[in-house]
Length: 235
Image 1 (cartoon, rainbow, N blue to C red):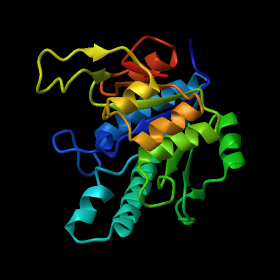
Image 2 (tube, rainbow, N blue to C red):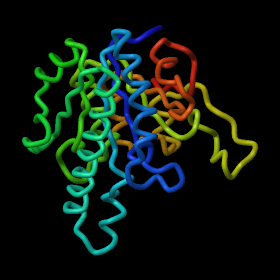
Image 3 (tube, one colour):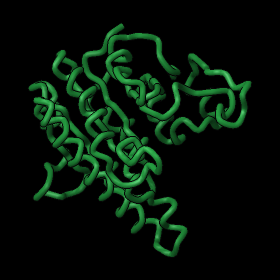
């Protein structure tokens, strides 16, 4: 199976410095942009949702005295910074791109309008979706599930540092093995830390498959798009 329209979920840390995951590392951004541009040039319609953890993670910052709502808005602004960095990198690869945000940052990006986003996708532009859902208390994983459903994407590709979901933390347990396939209910009942429960439930209710795969092996985005069996499939 190959996919024609996908949503790629990137963590903020994927764009950060390799050692710390913080800030924005041009080399990391360019490596991701290269893979995204390559599949877009092959005719795949690509939407991307960026996290913001490399700049500020709202849930963590709220424990330092800030209200959760304020901290989440700060985190959403962090995703806008990441989206603009990725946009420039993708366009430097020769592919048109648009950043669309869930709340108004009109001087830097377009507001998210579903029909406009679909038009960009059909024209071959990479659509980078920032500011989460536009609401505090929701993660960018939930934003990814929501936007993938709204835009009629065939799959939600969650790019991570590991090559799928494991029976235990492979860094701590040498006997941990990769799980090739899971159901949504298994993820929820076993409380597997793949995506938050709201995101998984939204995917389940809309029959949207999720593929968890390793972003840092070059070419993996293209391999998943072509239907190669990588990572863990949740459906």
